[in-house]
Length: 450
Ligand code: SF4
Image (cartoon, rainbow, N blue to C red):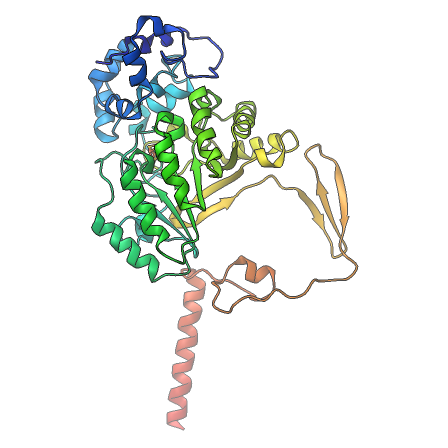
């Protein structure tokens, strides 16, 4: 049972405007009914972790109205539940119209998957040269440092991993990661992710950062975390003092809705930014949560005020258990169209589809090029104004030199370095290869006959 019974008091304030601060007992004026000891507990991240809502007993104690949802045990069995008391205190209404409710409370829809969804659509497991390390892009790798999160987001793209068992990377695994990175000096940027790495204790996080920093070719370390959103109390002076020893260190967090931009979240981000850590935000486009241009604009404006740069807006991945959150791709483009011109460039994220089959992030934009000719490019702005941009009279700039070892890409076509890229499994080309092989064989045969 939660010591802070007043936690649930917020639920009745259904139609209030979105909070600008978490309505926790600490700042809601309810302190008079709770002891100072309890108030201190609410601000203690370890208390928050130990009091996460992990089972139905805890959930029903806080939200008795959810008792008649008889699907809950089945959903929780498949996809674990965890909600910090802090994040639960941001729920204003007990239904899916509340964004915090939608992102934290299990739903029957998680069990209703169309055939196009899979557990690992990004094929991360296929790009794992050593357990826990995903190497997809030439110069970057992602380390799954833990499978634990303080909250299990219902829209999580790693539902197959997060919370299925709560564990952190072992010394042996970390050694394997080290050995892989030291023998792959082309990897300059390592993202420490999970699960949520900031749920680990400070010493354990430091062991990972120390290991990565001991590899001369690793220039940038990034941490992917939702902690400032769901457990801002974790951003303690002790943690920040440790993190700032490992610069250049970046943090990407994961705010999805303006209701998450509370006083506590602002304080957490301020501490990190004051320690010289650049902050970015990766949102996911979620049906009913943030899929209107106005909500998204409000989120981006709030983030920039907190010194958090909106970095990516992700289209939902084709992951099992999240169909009810998916929006059409066109909705993301609509949002991008709306933001351009209304917000400054630093407040506009890049909208990306993380392509199935490990295709990586593909930026998707409204089309701003109306037409091109060798002498002019016709562009349009957000208002619909059309402008011609004259091409330079000096002709093409100097040829770009790149090492021959660079992997072939669409850029090679655009720069004229290649004339074609042919996907391996096109039947017609496989047939062609067979025909060429047969022709070569018969020519050799003819030579012998001769
Ligand atoms: S914190 Fe991140 S990894 Fe954990 S459940 Fe949420 S989205 Fe998934």
